Image (cartoon, rainbow over all chains, first blue to last red; front, side, top):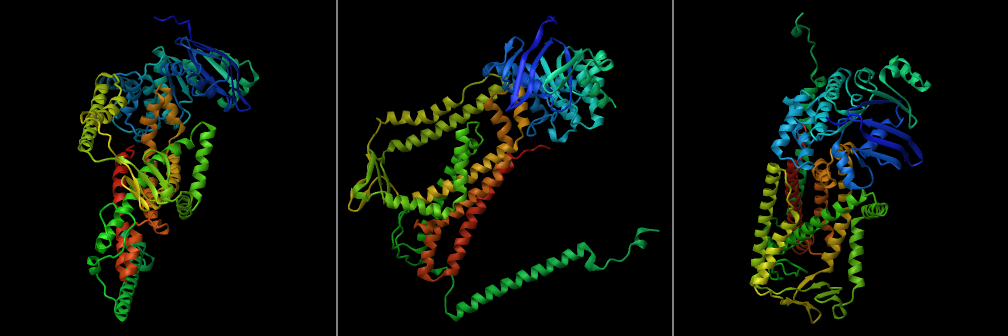
Length: 248
Length: 391
């Protein structure tokens, strides 16, 4: 068993600007192996930008990001290695519409991991079973509901056997009745010991799964605590206001 | 109360179905009347002026020279042959033009989206300038450039051995005919076939074992190396057919006329700007999320382009591309303005000499219709092939 106390992601003094706009201000974050973190906060607070920096979909200007011992620099080799080890699930699923579900899942393993096609398809079917959608393998993304598409997107990331999974508001583009099927898959994934960073406002999910919950506002992490204290006894004024707004 | 009892009677002029049939009948009647009027009017007037109709004139001697021709032609040949020469000239400029404008358009279109500021702006300027100057003006410009700027054949510019530039066009040395060249051609086809075989094998092996194998270099080696080997085996013939100044013009080698050059250049530059815009639109139509998703599973840049972006971009690019290819073909009829003997130009001379304008115009229309429809059919087939299945 790997040492669960050793940090897999280290973010030190991270700063990012969009032109003159200071999006991320001195962010410090350490994520241990198998840890689950939920980040919430108002829109425009920089929470999506933060996790998009971790697999270099966004470039940072100052500070350090180290993933599994590899530092993110301009070195393309490092970036590619980190991307294969960090899976990402997007708000709008971003499945490839011109490929079948099965081909969506095998694209990475075949072209990045250089797995034989047959083996890649077996792995893909294994993960499709896991997200309970195996019977849709030969359909196209356009034929699936939003919840099904998001579960396929999760399976697509899992096929790369990532060490960390990033979720960027995975349920906020879904119809209310499809949220649960996606959250169930994420809960199951967390029970299997996946390291997860989730940007989400699903408070129920945060309470059951997360070890730490954070509130971001204006490019800073304002408060971080275990979920019980975070929800029952928020310290920061901004957190109290935020929770009062979303919990009605 | 049953529906049949309660249904009120609708007067026929308020029933959309019956109304549509009525309008269709009226339209058919009007089109028929117009056609009858035109045909009848023409026939009556032709009879009045005693003009014979029919295609008999095609068998008669044309008695005019054509500036350039892909086949052997002289003034004593028939009108039919003269017109055929015109068709070949139109096809020549259209075909070369389409190939060139696709290549240039693709490059400019991708350059337009470059992250390099200079490249992006240069591509933008090219597109904006070339799209917005009428193509006829561009033809005049290029033709004037060739005709006015270059010296007469006697003082022809000779920038490198075997290449002469003058106001009669570009004279180019070509290898003198030798049996080796035909065999080299066969060897190249063989090399290409082997190359495609290799590509197929590499793909099969990749799916079976996951391992990659380089395709590009062996492919180039086979398709270029085999002809080279044949050339060496034949003792490497290097005899060239060099153009020589005889009388007022060059003899030997290949002679490309300034008319052809100006027409080709004008059409290619004008149309490639539109092709570039189609390419840009196609790539931009694929959402940023697709690239991000592909990046997040660790795909390399070339794989993202080939496996994710292009398959989706093509479906957007192909329909406007078809219409640009048709535009280029149809615009080639502007050749008449700068004296390139394309089909319209030859047909025009024929009409002037024979007075058979109805037949002449009908042939021009039929000819361009044929080109356009065949291009459309081919592109529709290709579009269907590359179309997104999606559901």
